[in-house]
Amino acid sequence: MRAFFYSVLGYFLTPAGVVLMGTLDASMVFFLPLGIDFVVIIMAARHPDLFWLYALLAALGSVIGAAGTFWIGKKAGEHGLTRFVNPHRLERVRARVDRGAFVVAALALIPPPFPFTPFVLASGALGMNAWGFLPALAAARVFRFGAEAALASRYGSQILRWMKTPSFETVIGVLIALAVIGTIVSAIALVRGTRRGSGASRPPRRTAPAATDPR
Image 1 (cartoon, rainbow, N blue to C red):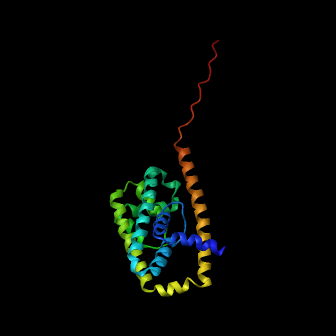
Image 2 (image 1 turned 90 degrees about the vertical axis):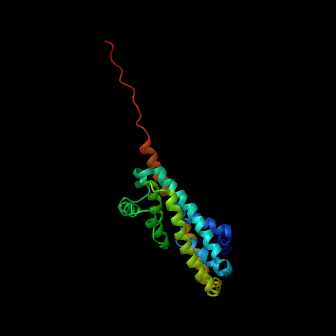
Image 3 (image 1 turned 180 degrees about the horizontal axis):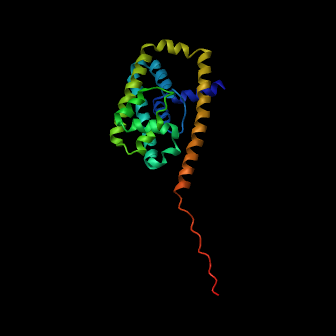
């Protein structure tokens, strides 16, 4: 089990893995609180001279994932939002989106467990300009990941020592368990929402007119 945990973690502790984690983190299916932040911090601690690179790679992946979520929202439209966003939360999300791209992008500075994905989804569904939103989001993500990476590069020795302790293995195990469970739940919710949407958009079946008695 230990080898499995470290093989999974090791896949993301590469430049390509940072981009992939950022993309998954901003998608509607993958669920791992602080996953991308965790990867950025470890990579910056290992290679402090390249802390800026890992911040940029994480931001790139995050924008790619957010672009996919934005596109799904655009396809769903305003009427389809309730299939993916809790109706009780929808009004609050809509109010923030109505305030503009910079307000929504600024929410990307807030780390989990703040639910940022519904705001990206609603931005696409409510017709926000993607070329205004995505660059603003990229700037917010670069700032957030850059700050994390800079701190990790400064205090990297303590982080690397912690990685050799049993508590680190426990943290990795918990994170992977959360990722598996959360991703399955998110995938089921997405499939159900898509099915409800396709069922609602399906035209009603026409019935043949009743035959009349010729007599």
